[in-house]
Image (cartoon, rainbow, N blue to C red; front, side, top):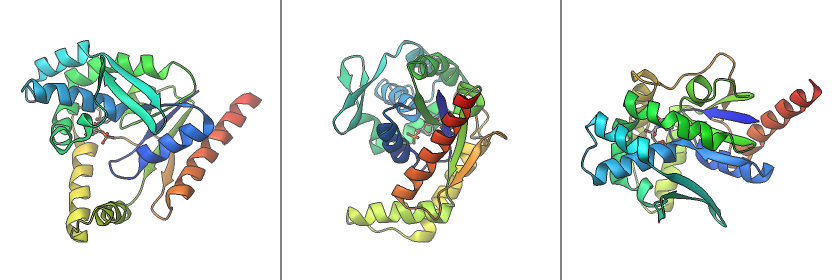
Length: 224
Ligand code: DC
């Protein structure tokens, strides 16, 4: 069974999907990590603004997800890039690289191959619309910009950093604009997707809500 979970950045989708996959003993496919791997390689090769070269990287890249005690590690070949793909520098490049149609086309097969290995939660932006249009369950996981900003500020505070709430809300709105309106594979809410608005939920409630949707769909399918 494939569960496609799409939604905007910063709603906590990744952490919740990871936890629910762990509880269900399912696989998790974090497609953002795949785009981040390409962005990392493109950045190191200094070709972030060259679509043909980025597509070449995407075509040949050997990405593996390896289960570990604290979650999943991401490898390119034999190199553990789990931290490198999440640095500020790589994060700044990934928007540009993931907006390239050539790169997205190259990454389709990798995503489909990695998603076909068993019961899997696949999370991203275009999973239900493009990558797995036949997914047994599609979820649009979201939260208001204000709720997302509050979560982000709580993280900043834990690290002893402080930010202005209005500014963070504004940044989130701008990023949504880009993701919803880019030319290739914009973030779309499929008609058949179940909307999971987690604005009023904490982490545990968000996990339970997603898990219930999956279990209900699974029960429905076993009755057919
Ligand atoms: O979920 P994330 O922040 O790790 O995603 C990293 C980037 O990749 C972000 O710019 C959105 C993009 N992305 C995408 O375009 N399509 C996907 N299926 C997953 C992520």
